[in-house]
Image (cartoon, rainbow, N blue to C red):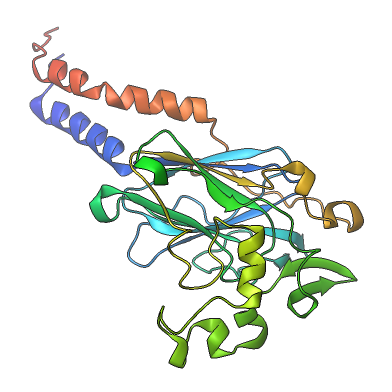
Amino acid sequence: MAVSIAARLTIILILLSLQGAYSTTFTILNKCRYPVWPGLLSGAGTPPLSTTGFVLQPGESSSLLIPPSWSGRIWGRTFCTQDATGKFSCLSGDCGSSTIECSGSGAVPPATLAEFTLNGAGGLDFFDVSLVDGYNLPIMVAPQGGNGGGNCSATGCLVELNSACPTELKVVDDGENVACKSACNAFGNPEYCCSGAYATPATCKPTSYSEFFKNACPRAYSYAYDDSTSTFTCAGADYLITFCPAPSTSLKSSSNKDQPKAVSVDSSTGFRGVSPSYLLLAFAILATTRTFWQALLTMPNCRQ
């Protein structure tokens, strides 16, 4: 049977598209003592991901393949339930979609955010953990491999802050602290929101409220112009995003407030739930395809 040139080219194009479609792996791990529902939002003009929301039980992880030059944010939703009509909602980090998938909607503050811009200026990934929109649970972002000098290192907010949150910033449900607002979200004043007359680095300065977050989490963003100690860069890295990286600092709610049973979600599509070892194997196979293409192009026609 002859292998036509057209067939060979089709195979090569398919392999090329597979190799170029993804550049980075995000592994999202839940080390909390309760379920967490990750939410994912792609930035304007960047490709959508295979999922925008799912559930992770305690100890579970999930890997996602991320397109090149993707930007967006990831956060955790907690205290989530689904009512008799099927409406899905969360007490913290809810995205307002009424479903497990956020479908293009971001987190309703307060929520701890992991933010990314991949393959940005100079080919570097830029990433941070932000408390500018408040806090709801600990998050750590740790590069896996890659390079970028002294700034290619883990960042995040590793401690539980809901109990220590100033009273005027607390989000309380049924007597339990479930999140901690930012001062901007709580009061709306320009000096807290870095807006109006305070919309520049020269005029918007740290406040006692932003310093509460900064003292607890010195590597995380505490207000809008907190760039110098809060932005990190890498090149060629994958990323591990961990909820509750230190189990001993888990939310007080995990012991005092009943967490609902995790709502199931179909994982038959996308790459959610794929073992990182299988992803590495897949990339290794793709990395060898150049040799395969060369062999394919020089393959003699086989006749019956």
